[in-house]
Amino acid sequence: MRAVIQRVSKCNLTADGTPKSMIKHGLVVLLGIEDADNDEDIDWLSGKIAKLRIFDDADGVMNLSVQEVNGEIMVVSQFTLHASTKKGNRPSYQRAAKPEKAQEMYNKFVQKLQSEMQTEIATGKFQSHMLVDLINDGPVTIIIDTKNKE
Image (cartoon, rainbow, N blue to C red):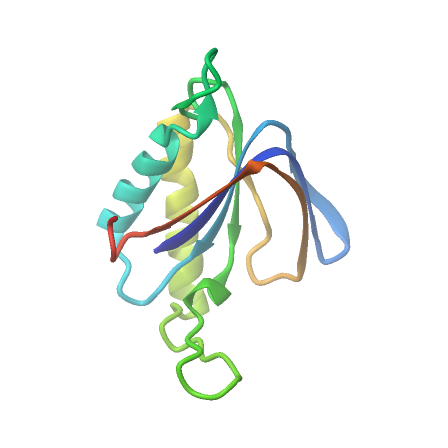
């Protein structure tokens, strides 16, 4: 699994032309799922995101998690995070999981993250055209890949 995590002051998501989700202060997680992903990836990544200390404390130091600041989270499926641009100029998405597996893993990830956070997680609409309107706070953007745990 590959995630692009953005600290936001707000985010609105429209799916197929219809407003779908909105969060205020928190995180937007763009989530790419590949064929090799499994439940261990879900457990590790959801725990990492819930505890990731990228919010400022009283001293202005990024030392607090989204849980500690009572922030919200929105998870948006994005298969293009597994694009390969090695050959030519047209990206290949061969590493991305097929839609059936990706949707199952996405749903499991959202459920696990809800369990970690003990609150509802906002989502996009799987396999839909979405418009994600967000204000990146900082800007703070973190990329995490469960196959390359740096």
